[in-house]
Amino acid sequence: MTLPTLLIDCDPGLDDAIALLAAAQLGNLIGITTVNGNIGIEHTTHNALAIAQATGQDIPVHRGAARPLIAPVMDASYVHGPTGLGNVTIPEVTGSVASDDAVGFILDMARTVDDLHLIAVGPLTNIALALRQDPTLPDRLGGFTIMGGGAHVGNVTATAEFNVWADPEAAAIVFEDFPMVTMVGLDVTHRVLMRTNDRNRLRDAGGTAATLAADLLDYALERAGSIRGTDGAPIHDASAVIAAVAPELFSGTHHRVVVELAGTHTRGMTVVDERIGGRDGHETSTANALVLRDANEQEVIDAVVDAIIELDRNA
Ligand code: RIB
Ligand code: CA
Image (cartoon, rainbow, N blue to C red; front, side, top):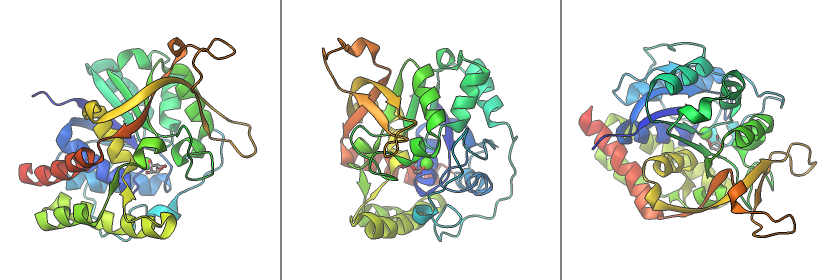
């Protein structure tokens, strides 16, 4: 079976790291681009290099935007820890970035690689800059999936999800310029929680990637318990990877989505228009997003865990 060709733009981040490990097994991961988000660009890039190394594959890492387009630099260190990967001991990085030009790499790959699926699981700064440099980017991709937003739920505020909130102007550009975005938002990622039994399966497998993923989950489970009071940790970005490679495990609806930029209480909110035949005659034909709503939680989690365990077997 031919694996899907993937390029992941990310801000590692605990769940980004788990997503990268799974993607390295489930797809042909031709590159990783990094962006400021969960933590600063130096940490997200260092973390991406360490995770790429842990996959046992030669995956190039290209550094991207160090700050949002307009918004101030904020981080999610209260979730991901001061380095972005909790208190996890990561492999000593022996490689270096392939370039400081994430945008150029994204555009080059979109122009030269057939059926490339771009997956963005951090703030959308690099993607917006790529669109401004080459508005034909959407036409050159086989697929585009983001972890971001939410129809009726926020995390960093009551109405906004972190990736969109951290750079709302970038997200607004992305939703304006892409004809169709697969939006893996909090509506569905809060339904896919990894728990201690999943962590134990990884720990018991004992390989480099599985042990690293178990260590990452240990920290994520503790933070989820402290912050959300849940016994499971949402693996937001890994869910987005599974949505890209196994869309049959998810369900969603098509809607027009715009990003609020000016609201005092709603800046960074993804406004999902769910009207059908509303006052302005809203039609799903104006939809620019497939908003995922539900998933087969156990099958998604098993896909992630099995992939990471298999990655070690293939190393
Ligand atoms: O809101 C969840 C998203 O914000 C995930 O991508 C996580 O890594 C953080 O970036
Ligand atoms: Ca992320």
